[in-house]
Image (cartoon, rainbow, N blue to C red; front, side, top):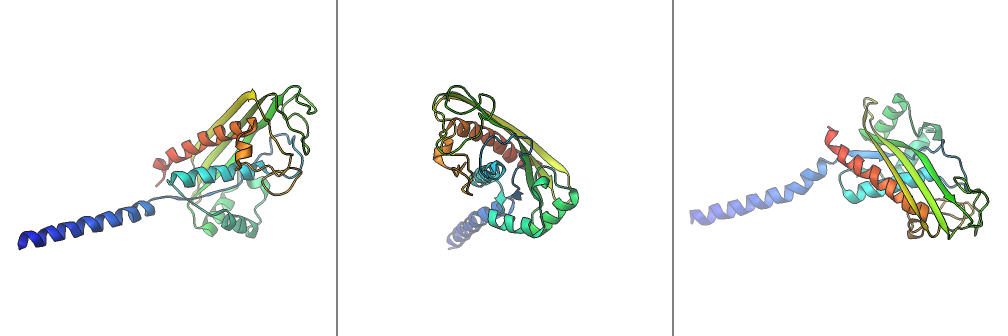
Amino acid sequence: MRKVIWSALAIALVMIVASASPALAQSKRPTVAVLNFDYGTVQQWWEGNWDIGNGISDLIVDGLVEDGSYRVIERKKLDAILAEQNFSNSDRADPSGATVAKLGKALGVKYMIVGSITKFGMEQKNVGISGGAWGGGKFGVGDVGTKKGKATVAITARMVDTSTGEILASAKGEGTSTRSGLLLGGGGGGGGQGGSGGVSMGSSDYRETVLGEATEAAVKAVTAKLIAAKTRLE
Protein backbone atom coordinates (compact mmCIF):
# COMPACT_ATOMS: atom_id res chain seq x y z
CA MET A 1 0.00 0.00 0.00
CA ARG A 2 2.83 2.37 0.90
CA LYS A 3 4.53 1.65 -2.41
CA VAL A 4 1.33 2.62 -4.24
CA ILE A 5 1.06 5.88 -2.27
CA TRP A 6 4.70 6.77 -2.84
CA SER A 7 4.37 6.00 -6.56
CA ALA A 8 1.31 8.21 -6.80
CA LEU A 9 3.11 11.03 -5.00
CA ALA A 10 6.13 10.70 -7.29
CA ILE A 11 3.93 10.88 -10.39
CA ALA A 12 2.10 13.91 -9.01
CA LEU A 13 5.43 15.63 -8.29
CA VAL A 14 6.69 14.97 -11.82
CA MET A 15 3.47 16.41 -13.26
CA ILE A 16 3.75 19.56 -11.12
CA VAL A 17 7.37 20.13 -12.17
CA ALA A 18 6.51 19.53 -15.83
CA SER A 19 3.61 21.97 -15.75
CA ALA A 20 5.72 24.60 -13.99
CA SER A 21 8.64 24.40 -16.43
CA PRO A 22 6.96 26.23 -19.36
CA ALA A 23 5.79 29.00 -17.03
CA LEU A 24 9.28 29.30 -15.57
CA ALA A 25 10.84 29.48 -19.02
CA GLN A 26 8.24 32.05 -20.02
CA SER A 27 9.09 34.27 -17.06
CA LYS A 28 12.82 34.20 -17.91
CA ARG A 29 12.30 35.66 -21.37
CA PRO A 30 13.46 39.32 -21.47
CA THR A 31 10.91 41.80 -22.81
CA VAL A 32 12.17 44.12 -25.54
CA ALA A 33 10.83 46.93 -27.70
CA VAL A 34 12.14 47.38 -31.25
CA LEU A 35 12.12 50.97 -32.50
CA ASN A 36 11.86 51.83 -36.19
CA PHE A 37 15.36 51.97 -37.65
CA ASP A 38 16.92 55.20 -38.86
CA TYR A 39 17.89 55.48 -42.52
CA GLY A 40 18.94 59.12 -42.70
CA THR A 41 22.33 58.26 -44.22
CA VAL A 42 20.74 56.38 -47.14
CA GLN A 43 20.10 58.42 -50.26
CA GLN A 44 16.38 58.10 -51.02
CA TRP A 45 16.14 56.80 -54.57
CA TRP A 46 12.53 55.61 -54.35
CA GLU A 47 9.32 57.59 -54.76
CA GLY A 48 6.52 57.83 -52.24
CA ASN A 49 6.66 57.50 -48.46
CA TRP A 50 8.28 54.08 -48.15
CA ASP A 51 9.63 53.94 -44.58
CA ILE A 52 12.34 51.31 -44.92
CA GLY A 53 13.23 51.74 -41.24
CA ASN A 54 9.73 50.61 -40.29
CA GLY A 55 9.97 47.65 -42.65
CA ILE A 56 13.36 46.50 -41.32
CA SER A 57 12.25 46.72 -37.69
CA ASP A 58 9.10 44.72 -38.48
CA LEU A 59 11.24 41.96 -40.01
CA ILE A 60 13.47 41.87 -36.92
CA VAL A 61 10.38 41.70 -34.68
CA ASP A 62 9.11 38.75 -36.72
CA GLY A 63 12.45 36.97 -36.36
CA LEU A 64 12.62 37.49 -32.60
CA VAL A 65 9.01 36.37 -32.09
CA GLU A 66 9.55 33.29 -34.24
CA ASP A 67 12.63 32.31 -32.23
CA GLY A 68 10.86 32.83 -28.90
CA SER A 69 13.89 33.97 -26.88
CA TYR A 70 12.34 37.36 -26.19
CA ARG A 71 8.96 38.80 -25.45
CA VAL A 72 8.42 41.61 -27.93
CA ILE A 73 6.19 44.63 -27.39
CA GLU A 74 3.30 44.74 -29.86
CA ARG A 75 3.82 47.34 -32.58
CA LYS A 76 0.51 49.18 -32.08
CA LYS A 77 1.25 49.67 -28.39
CA LEU A 78 4.76 50.87 -29.20
CA ASP A 79 3.53 53.35 -31.81
CA ALA A 80 0.92 54.73 -29.39
CA ILE A 81 3.53 55.31 -26.67
CA LEU A 82 5.96 56.92 -29.12
CA ALA A 83 3.22 59.32 -30.23
CA GLU A 84 2.42 60.20 -26.62
CA GLN A 85 6.09 60.88 -25.89
CA ASN A 86 6.52 63.04 -29.04
CA PHE A 87 9.29 60.71 -30.19
CA SER A 88 10.78 62.07 -33.43
CA ASN A 89 12.33 60.21 -36.35
CA SER A 90 15.63 61.96 -35.63
CA ASP A 91 15.82 60.03 -32.32
CA ARG A 92 15.62 56.60 -33.96
CA ALA A 93 19.30 55.79 -34.22
CA ASP A 94 20.60 57.36 -31.03
CA PRO A 95 17.91 58.44 -28.58
CA SER A 96 19.08 60.30 -25.48
CA GLY A 97 19.41 58.53 -22.15
CA ALA A 98 16.45 60.47 -20.80
CA THR A 99 14.31 59.47 -23.78
CA VAL A 100 15.28 55.82 -23.47
CA ALA A 101 14.48 55.82 -19.76
CA LYS A 102 11.11 57.51 -20.36
CA LEU A 103 10.15 55.08 -23.11
CA GLY A 104 11.30 52.09 -21.07
CA LYS A 105 9.15 53.17 -18.13
CA ALA A 106 6.11 53.87 -20.31
CA LEU A 107 6.43 50.52 -22.10
CA GLY A 108 7.41 48.55 -19.03
CA VAL A 109 10.54 47.16 -20.69
CA LYS A 110 14.14 47.06 -19.54
CA TYR A 111 15.63 46.51 -22.97
CA MET A 112 15.21 48.44 -26.20
CA ILE A 113 16.57 47.72 -29.66
CA VAL A 114 17.53 50.71 -31.81
CA GLY A 115 19.40 50.77 -35.07
CA SER A 116 20.34 52.22 -38.44
CA ILE A 117 20.23 51.18 -42.07
CA THR A 118 23.57 52.15 -43.58
CA LYS A 119 23.18 50.63 -47.05
CA PHE A 120 20.03 50.07 -49.05
CA GLY A 121 20.59 50.23 -52.76
CA MET A 122 20.72 48.56 -56.10
CA GLU A 123 23.13 48.70 -58.97
CA GLN A 124 21.85 47.66 -62.35
CA LYS A 125 22.52 48.09 -66.05
CA ASN A 126 20.18 48.26 -69.04
CA VAL A 127 16.95 47.62 -67.20
CA GLY A 128 14.98 50.58 -68.50
CA ILE A 129 15.43 52.63 -65.35
CA SER A 130 17.14 56.00 -65.36
CA GLY A 131 20.66 56.00 -63.97
CA GLY A 132 23.12 53.19 -63.38
CA ALA A 133 24.42 54.09 -59.93
CA TRP A 134 23.18 52.91 -56.55
CA GLY A 135 19.44 53.24 -56.42
CA GLY A 136 19.03 53.41 -60.17
CA GLY A 137 17.08 56.64 -60.20
CA LYS A 138 13.47 57.07 -59.13
CA PHE A 139 11.09 54.14 -59.30
CA GLY A 140 7.57 54.82 -60.48
CA VAL A 141 4.67 52.47 -61.11
CA GLY A 142 5.71 49.79 -63.55
CA ASP A 143 9.40 50.70 -63.50
CA VAL A 144 10.88 47.33 -62.68
CA GLY A 145 14.03 45.55 -63.70
CA THR A 146 14.28 41.96 -64.81
CA LYS A 147 17.90 41.78 -65.97
CA LYS A 148 21.21 41.57 -64.17
CA GLY A 149 21.23 43.46 -60.88
CA LYS A 150 23.05 43.74 -57.59
CA ALA A 151 21.54 44.77 -54.27
CA THR A 152 23.26 45.49 -50.96
CA VAL A 153 21.60 46.06 -47.58
CA ALA A 154 23.50 46.73 -44.35
CA ILE A 155 22.03 47.36 -40.91
CA THR A 156 23.31 47.90 -37.38
CA ALA A 157 21.32 47.25 -34.20
CA ARG A 158 22.05 47.96 -30.55
CA MET A 159 20.49 46.54 -27.40
CA VAL A 160 20.13 49.31 -24.79
CA ASP A 161 19.38 48.98 -21.09
CA THR A 162 16.59 51.52 -20.50
CA SER A 163 17.44 51.85 -16.81
CA THR A 164 21.07 52.85 -17.35
CA GLY A 165 21.36 53.81 -21.03
CA GLU A 166 24.17 51.27 -21.39
CA ILE A 167 24.63 49.56 -24.76
CA LEU A 168 24.65 45.87 -23.90
CA ALA A 169 25.15 44.44 -27.38
CA SER A 170 25.76 45.58 -30.94
CA ALA A 171 24.85 43.56 -34.02
CA LYS A 172 25.74 44.21 -37.65
CA GLY A 173 24.49 42.42 -40.71
CA GLU A 174 24.99 42.86 -44.45
CA GLY A 175 23.30 41.08 -47.30
CA THR A 176 24.20 41.12 -51.00
CA SER A 177 22.36 39.54 -53.88
CA THR A 178 23.65 39.45 -57.46
CA ARG A 179 21.66 37.68 -60.12
CA SER A 180 19.31 38.11 -63.01
CA GLY A 181 15.77 38.65 -61.84
CA LEU A 182 13.28 41.17 -60.59
CA LEU A 183 15.19 44.00 -58.92
CA LEU A 184 12.37 45.59 -56.93
CA GLY A 185 8.99 45.17 -58.57
CA GLY A 186 5.80 47.14 -58.21
CA GLY A 187 6.45 50.84 -57.73
CA GLY A 188 8.26 52.98 -55.26
CA GLY A 189 5.74 53.22 -52.46
CA GLY A 190 6.18 51.38 -49.29
CA GLY A 191 5.23 49.37 -46.28
CA GLY A 192 1.57 49.21 -47.14
CA GLN A 193 1.35 52.88 -46.21
CA GLY A 194 0.75 54.40 -49.59
CA GLY A 195 3.17 55.68 -52.18
CA SER A 196 3.21 54.72 -55.81
CA GLY A 197 3.66 51.00 -55.37
CA GLY A 198 3.08 49.97 -51.79
CA VAL A 199 6.14 47.72 -51.42
CA SER A 200 5.81 45.50 -48.36
CA MET A 201 9.03 43.99 -47.04
CA GLY A 202 7.14 41.16 -45.39
CA SER A 203 5.50 39.97 -48.60
CA SER A 204 6.67 36.96 -50.60
CA ASP A 205 6.77 39.16 -53.71
CA TYR A 206 9.38 41.41 -52.10
CA ARG A 207 11.45 38.51 -50.73
CA GLU A 208 11.73 37.05 -54.23
CA THR A 209 13.34 40.21 -55.63
CA VAL A 210 17.07 40.87 -55.68
CA LEU A 211 16.66 43.65 -53.10
CA GLY A 212 14.43 41.40 -51.01
CA GLU A 213 17.06 38.67 -50.89
CA ALA A 214 19.70 41.14 -49.71
CA THR A 215 17.33 42.53 -47.07
CA GLU A 216 16.48 39.07 -45.75
CA ALA A 217 20.16 38.10 -45.45
CA ALA A 218 21.03 41.28 -43.52
CA VAL A 219 18.03 40.93 -41.18
CA LYS A 220 18.77 37.27 -40.45
CA ALA A 221 22.37 38.07 -39.54
CA VAL A 222 21.36 40.85 -37.12
CA THR A 223 18.51 38.85 -35.60
CA ALA A 224 20.79 35.88 -34.92
CA LYS A 225 23.28 38.12 -33.10
CA LEU A 226 20.53 39.74 -31.02
CA ILE A 227 19.25 36.30 -30.01
CA ALA A 228 22.78 35.22 -29.03
CA ALA A 229 23.12 38.39 -26.94
CA LYS A 230 20.39 37.21 -24.60
CA THR A 231 23.04 35.49 -22.46
CA ARG A 232 24.48 38.92 -21.57
CA LEU A 233 21.22 40.22 -20.14
CA GLU A 234 20.35 40.00 -16.48
